Length: 305
Length: 270
Image (tube, rainbow over all chains, first blue to last red; front, side):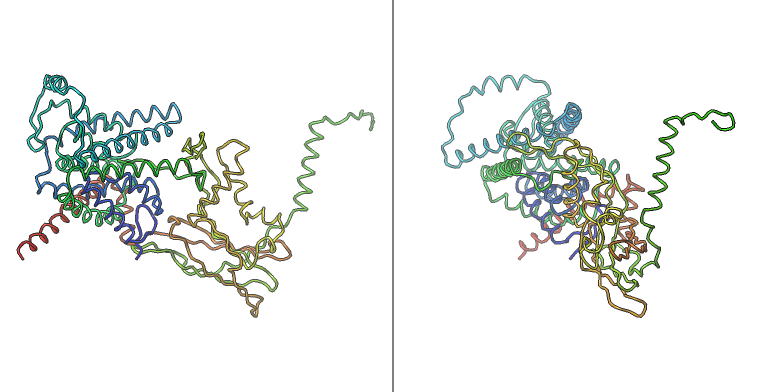
């Protein structure tokens, strides 16, 4: 069954779109990632113009993350206070990252830097997560050879200390804020939502339980993508509501299933899946880099989330 | 000397201008006469409507040719400018490096004919009317180094063909004898990937390797119904449209959660 996408101006099989949304929504609910890094290339492969794919993907992430947040909220996995700080930091970092990209593009060959940043960051985060989780699951995690007391003392001296009850942590406002500025910058440079980076950062650096990290990350993704959708719709006229809602039909169901499945998995198991996905994307990128492309020209993708 | 007026040699620029003018006059006199205009073909539908479940369209075209003529039909869109990312080899890897601006290529180019174009027309006629891959891409301007132009013109054509926007289908125009000569018919699939806009179908009547007649019919492709309303809203009232998109997406997400929650509740009740 084919449906015509009014803004994209092309016809696509309805079930392909719902199915693609379902797979990405499942990952979103399970792992707290937006899924933009998977869905946008998939939509371009289906034949959606890149600009429309990126903008409409943001809109469907609003639906998927709303569904995921609601489900995680019922399970007590959303810390709104932490979410608000993350959102503020992520938006600030995203803005800095976008400006940085403009400067890099003006200097030339920014694409190479973006590609290598993608591979190095995703590979390092994915690899570290995978090794760490395997050690934990085997019960063979070595004692850390560091001096946590000195670090904690330093962090505790920072101003604006606050409790994050759901996360069961106490941090200065500036710790999650500046970490999210960094993640937001990297996310903007890499052109992805940042869930891949945000969840590991929350678990390993902020010591937030993995389930709460996933729920809270979805909360900030919801608002980030709502903002991007509005900007894309008013600036570039690129949001296709029919495309977004069809993807959302699949992704909201997928997100619910993902959120439920996540309850039956240990935090380390969730992180292993996330790490596997990150490493698979890195592997796919490396294969894509060394394989001769079918065409020496490719459509330009603008926007993103 | 004529009547006391000394003859001076004409200045060189005037001689050159005269020669050039002479050449142009001779060239125009010897050039092929423009093909005669023929009655427009019957096109059905004349307007392709892109509704909510649009999946491409079948277009039927028919008309009359003279006995012994071959027919070539081209559905052509307006020439457009496009930007692409350029792939470049950097050591062992391929990266997107720089933009390529392409102008002069039609948005859509679908060629159908009653036989192989190379057998129906002489090379100069093919070039003149841009009726094969080489002549279509020759005027396309690709902003790359001069020695790369040919490669990137070819890549541009292949990319368009992969999206079904360019096609060559010889042998698809049917010719059968009729009282007034020969009737030609063509049924072709209008690609679902072609954007809305104004297109034209050109019918070339060929004899002895030359185009002897030409007819044209416009083909419109328009959005109708809900797609038209949404498309107009997205550009005409973008701010409202943006808010509606967010509200609809959020409602879909929270609504789905509610539905799943109710289903879960019922299961527990059982």
